[in-house]
Amino acid sequence: MAKKSTLPALRAALQITQQQLADLAECSIDTIRSLETGRRNLSQAMAIRIARETGVSVEWMLKGDPNSPIKNISGGAFNSSSKTDEGSADFEIDVAVDQLAFVARKVLEAGSASGTFGKRLAFDQLRKALYDVSDKYGIFPLPPFPKPL
Image 1 (cartoon, rainbow, N blue to C red):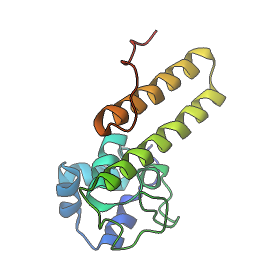
Image 2 (cartoon, one colour):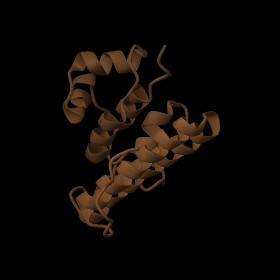
Image 3 (cartoon, rainbow, N blue to C red):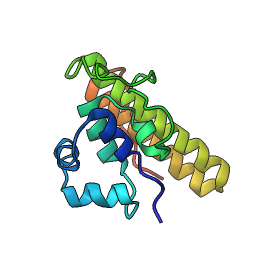
Image 4 (tube, rainbow, N blue to C red):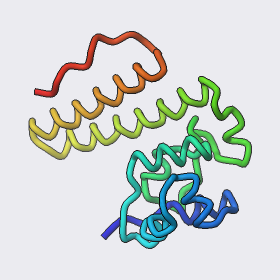
């Protein structure tokens, strides 16, 4: 069974309908209903799309605790002005950093709970996410991404 969804709390804070959230997330209303009822888990890709549209933290959405305070992509308290810099380089970098922080926490969790293969797989996921962000935003030059072992 899926964990408890943060989407109803997010919708309440944004004062939007399931259909409006589906439009933001670029998915069907049936998908939103499945996520909200716990039949499906929110994917990282969909959380990133929602973060870009709302300014809400990817990590908060994926953590699965709707009773915790809603965080913005910079880690502060979410409010209606959290997304004022949409489209700016700083906003996009904040979204990317939030995404990397989430992936890094998953790597740490996987590394402590699995053997060598699990650690290597988790590290490869983190490395790929870092390369994706670096390529997209030109944050710092990295050598070409090597193929996984």
